Length: 592
Image (cartoon, rainbow, N blue to C red; front, side, top):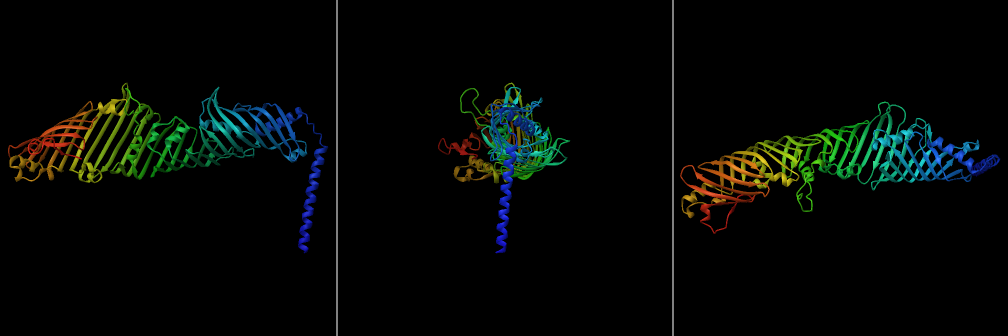
């Protein structure tokens, strides 16, 4: 009972103190000589606003003041400007909430200022600026203030200008810039709509001290970017942990600036790294990136500002699907008809930005083909596109390849090079069933050159040469020795040559390409007791074989001419002797 009585006494005492304080406040305000003339309100309010925001009020339509329950000031149709020219603007209404204690001493100060429906222009610097440059300008304006009240922007817009040209606009701007004292960091958070995408932002920006903490967060439907680290004002550099993610890299970059064609190579990206950021570059170390589900690690560097960036670096991974890159890089054929019909190469789009990327993989896939210990490079300069497979172990052997494209009057000059060394075709057949009929150890090379505005034009203009040698091999589906015996003896005395196989010591193929057609010359197969000679054409545009040859016995004078005609991997093998023993029109598919 005694404790309850004590508690009630304390509650009454607190109530009496509160009432006394309120009475004192009202008495004090009543004793103050408050001239509510608009001119005096304007002078007091404008002075307070300029002190707490660094903005010079250049005009207003009306000022209103209310003392109770809390001192509030409202200005209508306000215009303002930064004396140093960084920003200027107007607002439908400016609301300011005065502090009580300074008000008791006759001074006007604010703990919060609201800009309702503001329209703010931010001017670029002499260098033309960029997104980072404009952000630096705004943060620099806030940083130079000796102190700043809490600023709230509601339903506003921010326009980035160069002279009289609006370069970009933030709409639906709702931001809170926290109150700060001199030397304290700038802290702002909120949301806006940029290029049709709702975006959230959160920034902590130090204005004093070396290696002071900084943080940056930007999030939208297209990308998420976070940075937590430190900033050195003396070196104008920031370092720390960076995180980036997007479900479509191409769409994310198109949101920031022009869509670079190179970004179509990958889609979903999740990246973490240690970043070193200065005015001209971003260096990323200890990179761990998930690219469409495959993990890569290494280092990257971005030079220049968006959209004129240059990318370089080295990445390594245990496994990666290079075939996916090739599929996603395939250009889309236009739907219209005309002289430009075809699959465009988009050369200018591919070479918009400089790229120098090196890739090292323990294992890689290109379609169903598998490679190991792979090193590749992508090198892009203005007017030059080069993709190289520097080395790769391939089915007991090795492979290398190179694509080089440069601009010419007719479109692009494209050079293709491919080399194979001691590749075991029997192992290849496990992944490429279309080669299941052929085995042996293959060594070969090709070098083609084509010109055109589209993939079809390049293929139809290809010139160059190709060579292939296969040793100690076997061809399934045709038994050349049995076919020779059928030609020498009655049909019933020989085995069916279409069910067997042919073992050979060497297969040598040579071809010259001219205007998209391969001319097969000097092609021979040498086996035990037989040889095969082959010549004719392979149309690369139509993907059609038109070959003829002869099967010769090395022990007798028997000779069996034949034709090989039809689509690639589906051509029909028709020997003359077999044509006399079967109904006209039937043929044996050689590869399928």
